[in-house]
Amino acid sequence: MKQLIYLDNSATTKPSPGVVKAMIECLTNIYGNPSSVHRLGVEAEKAVNTAREQVARILKAGTKEIIFTSGGTEANNLAIKGAAYSYANRGKHIITTQIEHPAVLKVCGQLELEGFEVTYLPVNNEGVLLPEDLHRALREDTILISTMYVNNETGSIQPLEELSSIIKTVRNNNKLPIWHVDAVQALGKLPLNPEKLGVNLMSLSAHKAHGPKGIGALYLSAGTRLKIQIDGGGQEFGLRGGTENVPAIAGFGVAVAELEDSLNKNNEQMAEMKKMLVEGILDSIPRCRLNGPMPGSKYSAPHIANISFIGLRGEVLLHALEGEGIFVSTGSACSSRKKSDNGVLRAMGLSDVEQEGAIRFSFCAHNTPEQVGVVIDKLKEIVKELRSFG
Image 1 (spheres, rainbow, N blue to C red):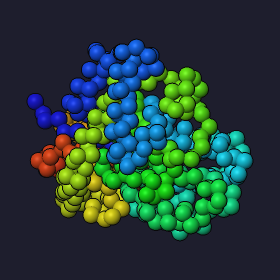
Image 2 (image 1 turned 60 degrees about the horizontal axis):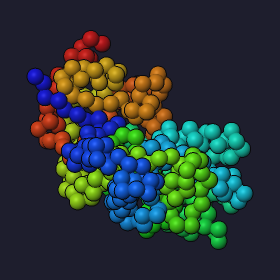
Image 3 (image 1 turned 90 degrees about the vertical axis):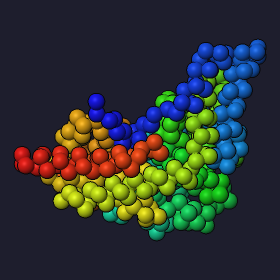
Image 4 (image 1 turned 180 degrees about the vertical axis):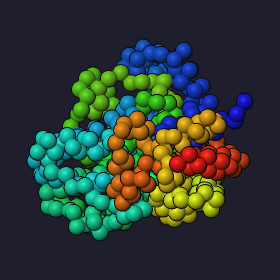
């Protein structure tokens, strides 16, 4: 039986045993509605409050600044629509980048149809936003900026500290513009401190960090206003109606608590494996290129590597690797099934051929250097064979 090597952790991660245990406990014993005043309801409320404390701690935030959502997509929608509608009387200009997740780009596109003006900033050939481009794009009527922390396709880290300096210097007495950061791919990989940066809104998703699917969170800084997007019974401090998903919330809390204790160690392990993979492929397989910053760069996230195998179709290579028990991706799981070009790679200046042959490898701390060695060896064989047919 072939060894299963899972390198698609940016699409989703395997829930940890501790997460599964916490969820089963809630499903079997702590099954009350957190809004109920009897004992079972109080126990469920305690589970939610504990998880809120765990998520708040990894962000160095207050518990009242954490709003649980159904995932990163809802968190992005609540942040961008909620802020845009709340501050529309101050202006209707929004700034984002060309490499954002569809959960940001499509929301911005919808807001354009409603009369907002959106500026989509370019990135350099490593997929990194240049701070001076943000500075030039700012206007008096700019009410909202939305940037990601780590790009889900290439692992490029955006220069949040430099962006923070620019935003802080232009904020007016109304504390505008509001700044939203999509940190879905940064959770458990990079330090998160939105208050220090001056970030008003930060989106998180549990299943990218060994938690369950269907649960996320939005950090909402004190004093930042949002227009409610899901009306209901007033849950989540009145900002997100609907009975709380207690098992998933509890699992989310355990996931971030586990990652908090091993953040630096995990990062070092993943960074070493990424370096080993990238160098092994580029040194031994001709006609390949890395899409994104080189490993070791301050702009390179430790867990994502995107490589184009020129002359091959990524989908064909993906399935050939799957046949060897190796699981990778051709890009974002939210768009990889669609027959369209890759907007992130296109924004970085890649040709159609380079986009077509792109494969994303994404690590977690459970991967091993031995697995990376197997992947490199199998790639050498597969790429040679596939190219012989061309």
